[in-house]
Length: 208
Length: 218
Figure 1 (cartoon, rainbow over the protein chains, first blue to last red):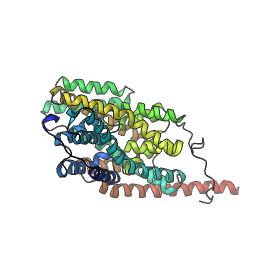
Figure 2: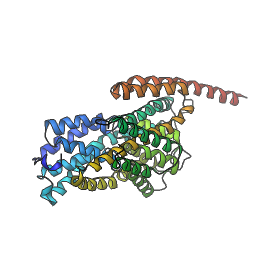
Figure 3: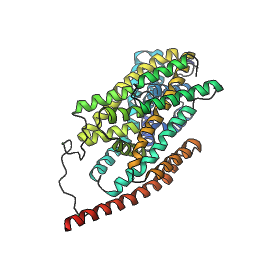
Figure 4: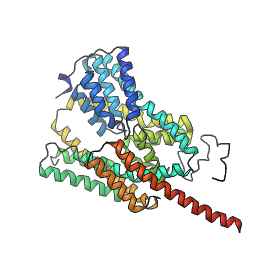
């Protein structure tokens, strides 16, 4: 299970890095609803077809980015980090590995963010100039209910995604914690970090 | 539509933003505010964005936030990144967009790499896995709460409260229960909702124009 026994050194030529860059740029344009929606395709490219990452490295990249502070898209840079480490022959290579890891992290992050951000910029510019047109206003307000439905779905799926091996008790506890958090955040101004700490504590105490 | 667009646009970053809400005061305010925001975003930044930008900073009203968030969500790319580009663009143009991205990403990236290095040492410990599960439940609650807060804007939405709730409920069942790909959901429900919004908006505009016309003629 640990990252040590899985991978393994890979060789990355400049052309391989170029292909990787192109692939992430394409995914950037396809990742509607966030980079995470492109994760299945990343798995195909990185793990199954090109063996740049082990399965364990792939999953832990997503999980860690999920619990760490910051935008979720950083999971892509964690994948880049692992690719960099692998290309240097693994973490035991020391400073060489760290440098390649850092390079890989930035490289992949730029590739996944740049294309969509440039597009977003152009759209924002256009929308700002035309903000009084009925089409623009209708587009924005028409999407609001859909977006709210999507957000509830995200919360729902996140909650459901973790119940692979749960017993009934832990299932109820987990839903109760979600409902409690939702109510508290909706109605009060309690700091979000306290709630996360509470969640971690519940987990460690074995309620989950 | 009677008034032609004025040919001179205000220069970027000027105080004329078409909004009464105060935006970021300076470029460093933008960078620091977004860094602080990003560092609070455990399990994604979504839940924190609303609280920081709307409730604390008051850069956006709830309505503006829903609108911008909708656009950020519908375009490809990470939502929070898109929102950052939009806020940066609105205030300081291209520099603003770059600063916003730098603010959202720099420190969180360093933090994450540090965490990854630490994690490789403890990844197989049971308590690590179970605390992750606990936090996951909390994060789910955070996101649902944010959606509930944003739902209050639907009262003012031209789509109308009943249809809005219907569209939101349909979106939820299609995505969360039936697992229909997002693209189709957006094509069907998004188009439907936008068409309703468009008809209402045009209706309201005409009514408003009629009112102002009668005022002018008297």
